Amino acid sequence: MIAAVMTRPREVAPVAPEASVEVRDLCKVYPTGTEALRGINLTFPKGQFTSLLGPSGCGKTTLLKIIAGLVPATSGEVVVNGRTVTKPGPERAFVFQDFALMPWATVLRNAAFGLELRGVARSEREATAKHYIDQVGLAGFENRYPHELSGGMRQRVGLARALAVKADVLLLDEPFSAVDEQNRRKFQEDLLQLRQVENKTLIFVTHSIEEAVYLSDRIVLLSPRPGRVSDIIEPKISRERSPEDIRRDPEYLDIVEDIWRGLRNYAD
Amino acid sequence: MSLDLVTNPSQPQAKAAGLAPSGGKSWAGSILLWRLASIALFCGLWEIAGRIPINVAFPPFSDVVAAFGRLVADGSLPSAFLVTLQPLVIGIVVSAVVGVSVGVAMGLRKEFEWAGVPVFVVMQAAPMAALIPLITFVYGIGLTAKVLAVIMLALPVIALNGYKAVSNVSPSLRAMCRSFLGNSRQDIFKIVLPDASPMIFAGLRLGISAGFVGVVLAELLITPTGVGDLITYHRSVADYAEMYAVIATIIIFSAVVVSLLERAEIVLFRPEKRELSA
Image (cartoon, rainbow over all chains, first blue to last red; front, side):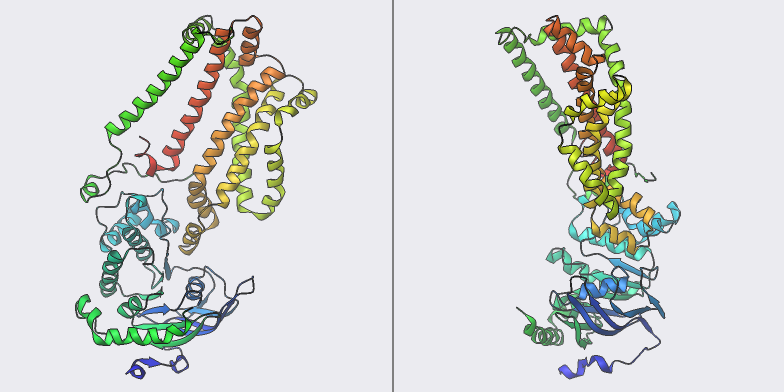
């Protein structure tokens, strides 16, 4: 049952044409000497939702930040749409764990900020931002300030900002970790719905097994210190059903259990 | 500075969605009432203490108010302020421009940090008033010396606050700016300065009050002119009510300038706090 959904990392087909992001022989050693990542080889197919899952300290956020171009790799390369990248680019957008919203700016300006930095005219960028604010369910809150919103709503602004720049690749760094449980579930469901509308490649960092299984097409399991790819799992869960049915589905529960069994060795 | 300010932070439909209501009129009104009551209490205690009297040199509040009226009427107080304001304004403008620029530079670049921070820390810790005789020795008793006295007191605190403000800017906001392709100019003007502005302005407020100390010290220690002269003169002829009127006026003036600056900061940089401080 497990074997059916698991593939060893080395057996992953090399550079399929639909690969959106590719990570080759990536290593990261911090100046302090800490080895965060060792020999990471991964492909993130176009249009797929891939989760990076692992215990804290496995370097999953570091890997995401290297892909984003925010942190330099020690060796190896990141290829996005066929080109090697070392800096942030217009084809990638980042959603931050702590939201990274400007407290002095309204929801509208925050959501339009990526476009503002690119020099898009005010009326145009605000129209685009408004569209995505509606899409993440914040219509009517355009002129509020971040401190007036709940954690879940703030992260929706962060998501709208990332969507507004129309990048192919969305990089989400534990976007729900600072959001309370009810809002997190609602947000996860909305994120799945949003996937139907926006055809994006999503790379999602999380430490929640349930969240990864519920949301992802593929789950990359990372082992800690130094981070290596320990497994790639493709939960073939039909997302046609209601969220409640998915969460009660025996297959869903089995995959969660399997991943937990794999990860419990790393628990302190 | 290109900051797009968005007007009208409150919006009826969002309020209907059950968000926390912003500070209402009645609340703001009662705050004002409490402040006025506190001032009235202070003046009342002053009046009583002056009437006991606790000291011959301590006139009651009503005498000081009357003295204030006389000083304004004969024009001596307004003309003294004009004289005092000259070195004060020049000194504070120079300190603000130099202090904020140097402070921000020290916060952004390691080489400026190493070169500048120790100097300002020493300047801030040193009893600058002790150096005022030295200024007189070098620059004489004119305007330059008084401007320098203001700068020596105001500049370190402004520069150090600017430095601390910039080093404390949220790294995640700067990473956000970088990830959405912001260049370093945009990083400074759209993220670093707005995020650092509360602390920069705190430094400016402290700098302005230090500047007032500087200018009054200069007028008392270098040559008696302006407000310093009025204080010295009325003390020497034992017009204590006049002396207190001058002292109280300069204190109130300083407090008003400092709180106006706070307003200016909120209007320019912090639209989200406008409702709270209304």
